[in-house]
Every structure is written in C-alpha cells, then in structure tokens.
Length: 64
Image (cartoon, rainbow, N blue to C red; front, side, top):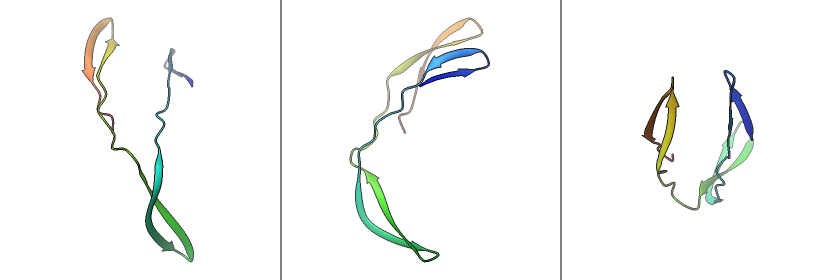
C-alpha cells in the first residue's frame, strides 16, 4: 500500500498473520463471540535504516 505523510511517500506492506480458533467463547449483550489467537509467536525485526533531517541512523524495531 502506498502512503504519504507530510509529503514523503513510502510503501507499507502489512504483515500476514495466521490465526486459529482459541476455543474460547464469550457473550456480550446477547451476541456470541469466538476468540482467535495467532498460530506463531511474533518475532522481532532486524535493524531499520532511517533518515531524519538529513541524518541517517539505524533503529531496532520491535515486531509486536
């Protein structure tokens, strides 16, 4: 997905998360809800190269 923030364009790709039924069922105002959980635990991403006001630096991004 192509996004723009304050005139700077960038490409954003959402992460694909596989989910499964947790077996938990809730009830709220007469409606039944099934709760889901991810099949795999999220992992941290590697370092990302960022630019701020002409300065380049590396940042570590948490994958959660």
